[in-house]
Amino acid sequence: MKTIYAVFGDPVEHSLSPVMHNAAFAALGMDSEYHKFRVSKDDLETAIMGARAMGFGGVNLTIPLKEKALEIVEPDTLALDIGAVNTIEFKNDRLIGHNTDGIGAVRALQLSGIIIPNSKVLIIGAGGAARAVAFQLAQNGAKVIIANRTAQRAHSLAENVKSVGDARGTGLEDLQELVSQSNIVINTTSVGMHPDIDQTPITANMMRPGLVVFDIVYNPLHTRLLTEAEKAGSITIDGLKMLVLQGAESFRIWTGVEPPVKEMEQAARTALELR
Ligand code: ATR
Image (cartoon, rainbow, N blue to C red; front, side):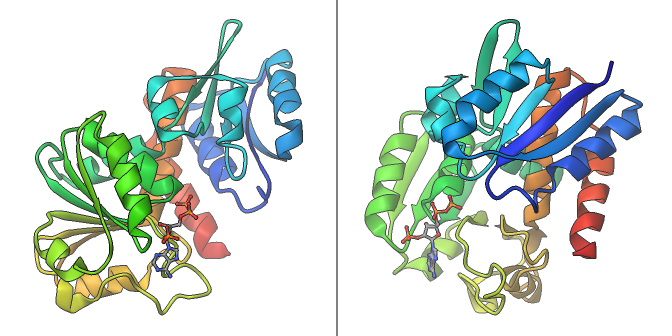
C-alpha cells in the first residue's frame, strides 16, 4: 500500500513541499505520495492524530502551526530550542517533533563548499527563521552575530543561542562594519520579498569578493540582495536551496534514505519558475 506524507498549514496552497517530495519518491521508485492539507491551529491535534491513525509516513508543518505543535508532539532538543516543529516523525506510538530549517541552511552552506566551524556569520533578522538558522550555525561552531531592526529581539535571541554556541546580538546601525567583519551574511528578514522586490538589506558597496551572501527569501528566486552581491563579486546562495535542503532532511528522518537532492531542487525550481 502507498505511504502518504503531508504538509499541514494555513495557508498551504503555495507550498512547494509536495512537488519536491513527490519528485524524490519518483526518483527513487518509492510507492509514496505527498499531499498538502489546509489545517487550522484549532484542528492541528486532531489532524496529527488522524494522520497517525491512518498510517501516514510523516508530516511537515508550516505557518501558523509550527509553534502550536510543541504542545502536541514530543519536540527534540533542537526543536525545543528553536521553539518550532516543522517535521513530525511517527515513531512506533510516539510523535517526535523535529526542526530541519536550520539544518537546511547549514547544508546549503556546506554544499557550496563553505566551512562553518569558526566562520563569522552575520544573521540579519531575529524572527522565527533567524532562530532556526542561528541555533544550528552556533551549534556547528560558527561565531554568530544577530543584527535586527529591533535590537532587543536580537539581544534576546543571542542570549538563547549562547546556550549552544557563540552568539551576540545588535541593532542595524553598524551594518556596514559588521558585514566587513563577516565571512557569511544571511538575510532572514522579509526585506526584498515580493512585492517589495526593489528592497535589499545591504547594497553592493558593503560587500566584497569572497564574502558569502545567502538570502533565505525565495520569492522572488533572485532577490535584489543577490543581484547586489553578484555586483560585488560575492558568492551567492538563494532561498530555494534552504527550502529544498530542509525538505531533504525531513525526507531523511522519515525514510532513512539518502534524499535525491538534485531531483528535489530541480522540481521545486521548475514549479517556482512556472508561477
Ligand atoms: P519569520 O518567522 O519569517 O522570521 P518574523 O518572525 O515576523 O518572520 O520576523 C521578521 C524579521 O524580519 C524580523 O527580524 C523583522 O525585524 P523586527 O524584529 O525589527 O520587526 C525583520 N524585518 C521585517 N521587515 C523589515 C524591514 N523593513 N527592515 C528591517 N527588518 C525587517
